[in-house]
Length: 423
Image (tube, rainbow, N blue to C red):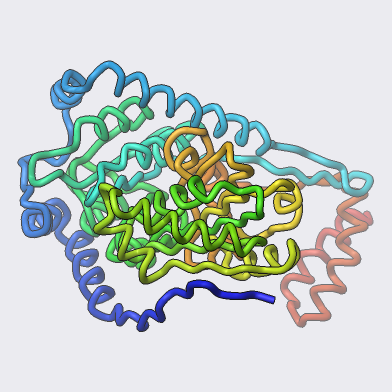
């Protein structure tokens, strides 16, 4: 039976009508006016209105020269891990052809989209890892044209390390523009920028709403909200490490969500004490303390089965399992974006370094989708062909099936083949 030691405060349902209308107006302006609308909104929101939003080779080289060698090496290391895992995923998306009946051949082809747009958020932190995740992945999938954009930092252009990450990841075109106008420019195109087929990447509620409204005109990855972590632990867990992992996600956003499901009341209580202790000196406590105070939950459960049930109901973006038998949870949990098994891995690894993609479902979307991966940038299309003998066999059944539904013209397309092939 669940025993809540700490419950999240109820949050009133946010009225997003103003956000939706603002986004609609910006997207319509960008679609109709192109670069002039982008420049107008960019000046208003980001104090940024250059003659061209496209980054030049000279700007790229200048940004690279500002970076310490260790930073460049670390970015390269992270990108190698992400590229390696994406390549392994891609190997498992394969073309095939099979003979399902004598003379009937069905096949599958995996075809990359022609172009994609990667949105790398700015804001509170420079999101280097978002460049890795959203630029490398489509390139590995075979997308021939990857456009990347990110907002300027304080009206001064792209943060140099973010720009280097985009370039090293393989972006073919890079633009310094952010927010709804940046997404609209990639989706609809503007002077000097052809529209893309898919847009991906995280952002604030305006970015999420823009992707929602753009879907259909272009493909999207998913609609992500504030980050989430759920930790399942037992009496073998280290409260010091569990607390650090929870706070690692709490610092993202005042609205981030955290949950601890513990099979040990003692460990749960010690973790709560440890969170309070670590918050006293945490450099980002102004955000993490609000997030933990408002949205943190601690639940003590009696069994592994109950832990799995509660975790699947929560459907977290990130699921950490710090138990003696973490494989049980790997075998039985079904609703999560990415699982971190054992104390030896942490969400921070997945966010930055280890190789899995950090663009993951939030707000219980893990019930029906996984995160960003090479499969989001390819189309799995099918084809079929048959011998005349096999076509005749199928046509006889198909004509009757069409007539059952009163789809008479469909039936005739079968009947004409019967008449021809029977001769």
